[in-house]
Amino acid sequence: MSNSINKFAGFLGLMLLVSCSVQKQLERKLHDEVLKDKNLTNAHIGVLVIDAGSQQVLVSHQADKYFVPASNTKIFTCYAALKFLGDSVKGIEYSEGDTAIYLVPSGDPTFLHHDFADQPVVKFLQAAKKPLYIIDANWDDKALGSGWSWDDYSSSYMAERSPMPVYGNIIRWIQERDTSSPATDNVLDQPVFTYSLPDVNWRVKFTPDLKQRNFSVSRDKDANVFTITQGIEIRKEQQVPFITKGLESALELLPDTIGKVIVRLDTSDAGFMASRVKGKVMSRPIDSLLRPMMQNSDNFFAEQILLMVANERFGIMNDNLVTDTLLDVELKDLPQRPRWADGSGLSRFNLFTPADFVSILSKMKNEFGMERIQRIFATGGRGTLLNFYKKDSAFIYAKTGTLSGVVALSGFLYTRKNKLLCFSVLVNNHRGNAVEIRRSVEAYISELRRKY
Image 1 (tube, rainbow, N blue to C red):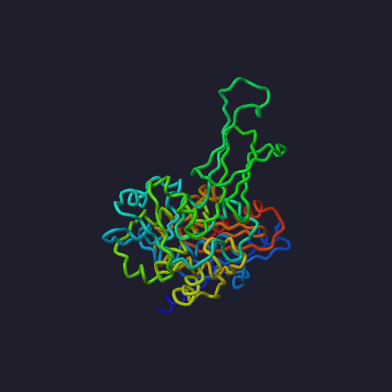
Image 2: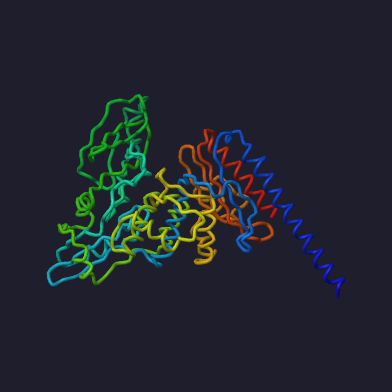
């Protein structure tokens, strides 16, 4: 008996020694391949890796320090959606009276979005036999998020938020040249056509400056006035956000599509419609919205999803209300309390720790299961990981994050021994090449997969 106990104790000691040896190897690899990278000499770096099964910490470096996470913020938005939005996206709510139908917007970003062919809400509105009225008393936020870079207002990745988005709150401007016209030595002599989807009656200016020689469209900061420079391209498309003005722009664009006018009711009484709502139109499965948010890092979807969560929980679309409540209730056990400023990660006011991300990832795994997470998160060779982790495709499921000076990656990794790891790597204030930094992180994550 004594001999058996001694053997078992020896075995445990050996396993502990091996485990410590692996941890030291991983920490040394982190130091040699990431922390000493020339692109990261003066950067701030935080890393945490745990075994998702045993919760053993494998690697920790400044894991309790705060970092700007960029689009890794979407992991928290994804958790909120999975927790509160059910299995389908609510397209619109309504109440039908004797003489009219009253609508309440839900914030659904897929309404008339060109990536979604099926449009149940459009069909509902077109089939309506009574006058349509809408009230947006449940809207209590601003078009642009707190801490966004205001001078990016004309960039496609910063579409405005609104109570009832249409067409993704962007205009698709398209230039096409008539290549069937008689041959000419100068491509600029070919007939050129410029049009928009959807068709708009807003003011358009054409600039004669051809030095750029590339098709480009910009918008005035405070008005839906667009300036177009024609280019040499045979066909080119550019997406430009429009000013939403709450419901105003949406209601202006809708008649051409649904064939009827929707009238806004001017009332601030949210309870007025809350007591009248009798029905709702569901637009699509929620995961069909979460996938592009997580895999393609769609900022607009992320922002609207967070507002939809607020609307579902409180009947009011306000991002601060929902983030503060989540941090006070469902996420009160996070290692460090984040500063959560928006849904997408565009804001530099966001501050999270690597430990926060590992904690939320563990919570997602436990509450929603890895099978669903694998359908939603990007893997190697897909989405924002298109050019990374191709050898580890189907073994890594993660979210990237990028801003100027910021590189982030947090997610799940299956090792060669089929152990599941949760990890977070956050880099701030770098002045190097972002792609090279991602390659260094990729080499380290691949080493984790091989070694553990």
